[in-house]
Length: 177
Length: 301
Image (cartoon, rainbow over all chains, first blue to last red):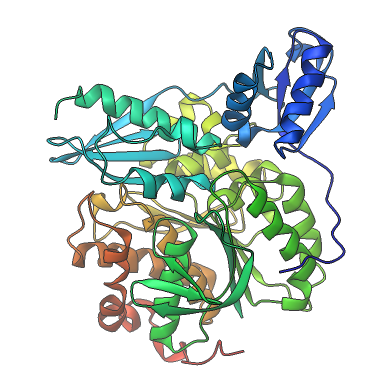
């Protein structure tokens, strides 16, 4: 289906990648643009500055995919942060609900449920990013310790939260078949 | 027309627009067979089943393959921005995508060119983008779950992974506080259907009613049961119900279908959707109280 009169709107990302030096920032920009990520070199606000006075604005939702790519390409960076000054850090806590034969673990907006006896993943729910239905299809029916990791297959913060839920499920199940 | 927009987890699915048909347990859209799984496909399936029962025009959809990289999402939103005035849907339901604040802003501008403004519903990451961009009040309906409600209440979060811990820690009884916080910061749509152990229907900050029966806790772990509520809600609005009525009936339908399906955490969303016709037949008139006004064919366009 062809597009017509295509005009890309200006970029609003919500996240910043911070660097120790300008060279790292320039290299990361090149790596990410080559992989089709929308990024913009910006000056970080003073309160967020960690190293040099150049940062990359990114779509914060893409943080996991971007961090994975920078690591794979050995492109150095200090950290990834939300731009909004009052924003909290990544949510670390999880909630567990017992459904008798099944346990459900919730991490932020993502939930993963497994059968206690077998460790088989029976459902994932929640989220809104495009990798979540893909991960749902890839993970269901697999044992917790044999399922693909969302942190490896996914690209978004939803996938990262699903990975945290999986980690907690693995700890609760204890690897017992 | 009712237009549903969202990504599908099939890597090579091109940008596709068309009317939906059912093909056994799958959807058939412009020659593409789409399985009914969590996400946009579950939402479309729920809407299709409801339109078939009400003898309405089947949903039109704009879909694209995207497994997380976001290229499909951007292509889909760019096409919608260019086309929405020409399409001029009566109901526009935005769903799974890579959230993009700038594209959402452009879409809100493009919607001003529609001859008649559609009823705009956002769920999943389309809702995340609308809130993150400060555009929530340009939308008619959001359908958050409990954590997403906390996200709307957190003025600084651009994704639910970054909400403040004390907001994630709240239980369902705290929903009214979260609702108030979201509206105070203009981070909520005109109407909210907050999905949870108790569903809250909220209009412009006022909690109109709640739905808590039948109580089927196992619906929460089942992937796609939030998507089906949004698909039902969109269809009932398309059928001519007021959004608040549509929200109540959508919530009740989903719960009753879960009960009839004897849902467990291992149930698949298709098993829930399969119960919708029975629920409609048994309860729709009773619940809506305006069933004579649900004129079959009203949505034909």
